[in-house]
Image 1 (cartoon, helix red, strand yellow):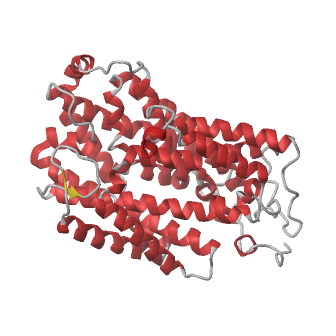
Image 2 (tube, rainbow, N blue to C red; image 1 turned 90 degrees about the vertical axis):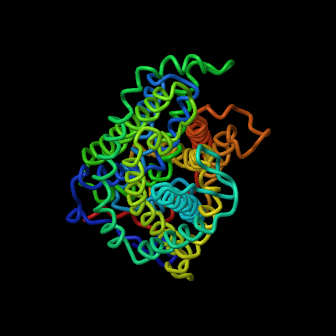
Image 3 (cartoon, helix red, strand yellow; image 1 turned 120 degrees about the horizontal axis):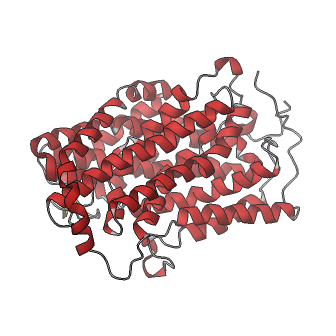
Length: 466
């Protein structure tokens, strides 16, 4: 491989050898399942129940999980397995050698700062709630038991928690793995326990839901919002499918790992969480609290407080993973600044967003993630199909089809986001993350067929993993 003319992030990349590969179920499947077991995924899924009944919302979750696997993950995942290379390398085919610095390279690291703020916010909120306190943030959403205002306790817990796990992430993936080993079993048990505690109120939820139906909202709105939230939550990890599958042995590993870890885990976790929320609201004979944590508190009493603390402990692995990706992505693209500095700097921004409560606005945040990485997945899917699944290698400069597809897709994807206020074109329940994928896919195909794809980078020789 003649690397002297290549950017450093490409010149230094080495494929994972076939001798180091492992079964997809134990690697890709387990990793994705751990992501969906994080409470940040399912805490606000219950908001879809304010727009639709339990059956249609569960159907939306099933559809969202299937789309996550079949559209957002599989193409990047297959390239990762075939090449043994991570997303920021295989993405240079779609976005170019220079374009790859930002998309998906630096951009992935920047969005992980947002995820780190979510991890910090949730861990802080759950710890304080579990010990009987009332979370208080300056800018966070108001829920039962919460008030707006400055809380020195909330800030202290956020700072201590945030910097502790940023440090673990900065030290390297082996430390993240050690933390992750204690993570998966506890949330599964608690999700089951929570559903059992709330299930007695499930039969009353239908009547409560009908009595509180919102005028002018279509019957499928809850289903569509569920699709949007499932895709939005997973979009960054799904786009980075190559990072997860570069250690897979074959296509079967990629598919099995994704079916179990993405489709299976996202649906399993969501159904248990939705049962808890619906049952709690049914037991109260009114629709009042759609967050999973709040609903758990309504039906669980003292047991729920212990569970909230354990859910906070379960946030350690996602927090460490996010901080690791922040440092790894940004230091790879801008090596002049050390990984430790990138990690701690990114964590500081995340801690500020978490401590003020900004990170608690999950519907808008999921929508932003979906709008940002839905087009990345759409453009890469089009590139994959045009090359019949064979990675073409890096393309020179900045790819016009790739960046045009992303830009137009992003505008479509953010068109329903509450952050835009009155500028939002679509209602918030629209699955705009899915629209952004479709639009980016079409734009890339049209521009690539028009001959606007850059030439392949001659300095790079595609090497099959040994």
